[in-house]
Image 1 (tube, rainbow, N blue to C red):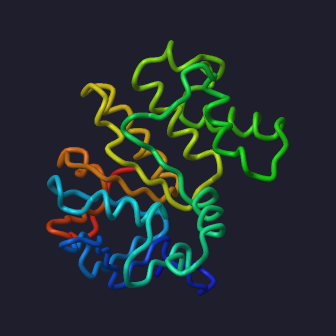
Image 2: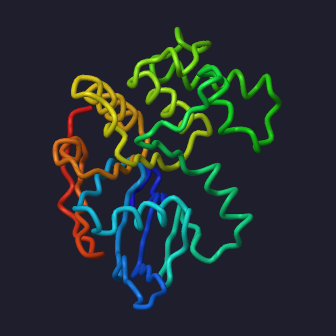
Image 3: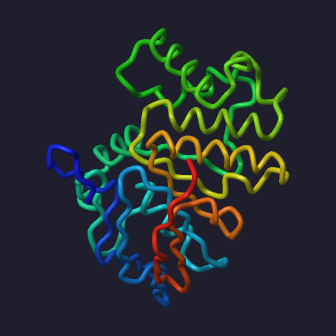
Length: 239
């Protein structure tokens, strides 16, 4: 665990203990086999593995889109594997920001309106959601494109809008699924630099990727193969 100067301990963002995911057959398929993983608050972790290795299964479990068949998943110290669906939905909206390869933006909504969608079911009034969306867009360097529509944006700009949407609720975890997969090399580099900067500001980041070059940007790489996790040592990276 991380320790504060006054001696109090902060729970890791993620703890998996002997997590399994078995899909019913016939025959049954064990997609995740007794996974153990701890991700400290503010850490930047890459998950890599070949197609069919279990990356998508792990992503769905970490993102509370699926439940483990067995084991414990703690998010900010709460065992989210055992709570009800309504509570899981609330936790997912409040504590996890998703960034996908395909952006998933509404084409005829402005950048600001797309970001505001992440707060649709929150307690804030529209004017507060508008203000928070503008702040999130400024955080990713898109203040000047707040009123633009995705149809007029480059791929890199659209991914920045998607990242702003993921950040607007100040999540505990930024969960990125192949976030550079639809981008050219130069644009991908700018998105990876943005993720590095967010991590430098204290954001916990997990990136799912098949690209070893993308994974090299992280502090630590977790390899998944045939449903088994193997974690490499943590490395220090430039902020």
